[in-house]
Amino acid sequence: MNQRSVTVAAGLLVALGFASGATAQDRGFITIASTTSTENSGLFESIVPQFEQATGIEVRVVAVGTGQALRIGCNGDADAVLVHAPAAERQFVREGCGVDRREVMYNDFVVIGPGRDPAGVADADSAVESFGIIAKAEAPFASRGDDSGTHKKELGIWAEAGIDPAGSWYRELGSGMGAALNTAAGMDAYIMADRGTWISFDNRQNLEIVFEGDPILFNQYGSVLVNPERHDIKHELAMEWHDWLVSEDGQAAIGAYRLRDQQLFTPNAN
Image (cartoon, rainbow, N blue to C red):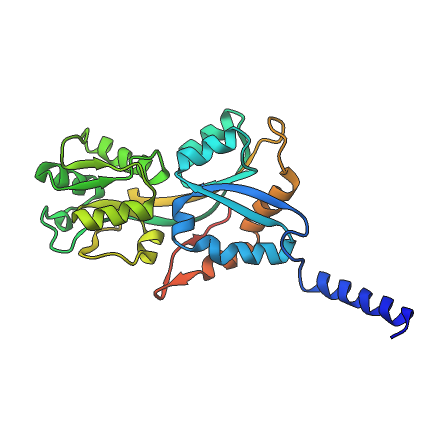
């Protein structure tokens, strides 16, 4: 092959590379602080490669509880956050830690417990009543206890029920959703979980959904950019991720993710 042919061939390869989408790491990486539920559910494993292929930007995920994810963002140790505690997300923006909060997707929380349901939670008419039944029976309850979005929601329901949970029946674990479900399965305990992680969870043992469907259990996820005026971050690259999540392609990727013939998250870009 002569030099002209080599040059033409090289040009064609470059053109094909752009046509088919850049390879991840071509343009560097961003760090996303997110919840354990997005990781444990397998969502990121499904959608991140699609974003990387489309943009050439590598995504590195730090999966922790929502409270910790927001602290990581506020410290400038991430470029964006994807979490599920709307009140805390808005506070994150008000305090100047983040900018441009956008709603991305939702699912719901469910109350899990032993299939035999010894406390009789299935008879409840509301999530608040179900928690009251558990407390009255002093049935074992496993709490994440980690300042996560799930933990914040759980504490809110206890507060609505007028109950300050304490005692040997109430176990604060300080762990992620998957690990907490494993502990609850071993204890034969009640627990509140996000539906996405529950669908993907394999070690169910005797656990089943014992209560669901109350509007209070709605679970909204939001993406927030870390404030570039406060920290030296990869704001422009993170903006591409932020935009992609609410784009037609990003929303389709989220909606298409299924396990056990069930959709784990419903896109609702805003």
